Image (cartoon, rainbow, N blue to C red; front, side):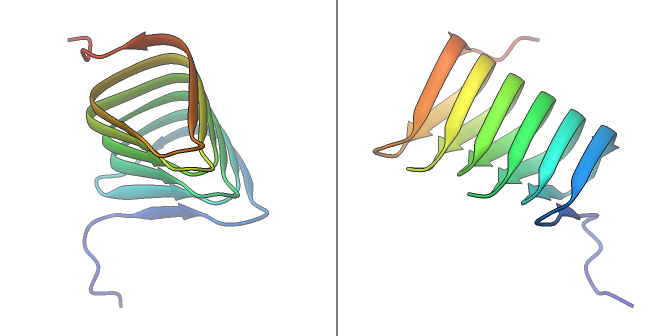
Length: 110
């Protein structure tokens, strides 16, 4: 039995998932997801593609994140990261090469 009680979820490379996913810890997307994600943290790896409605305290994007994204605390766009759509964040960091496009709001909606 694992000692990890955080409730993390990994969408592995090659996996295609659709639907609503909620995790008390981290959701890491290394595959393709289309749906609604709610977690403490979301990490989209360089191979990950996430489409839909995503909300977390902290979001890190090295792959692709599309549609609606809400990072209540921080949004980090790595050099390979691409974000498009309706974007809201508390703090924003974009590494050289990273890209965001769409409706961008520096205040998280209540």
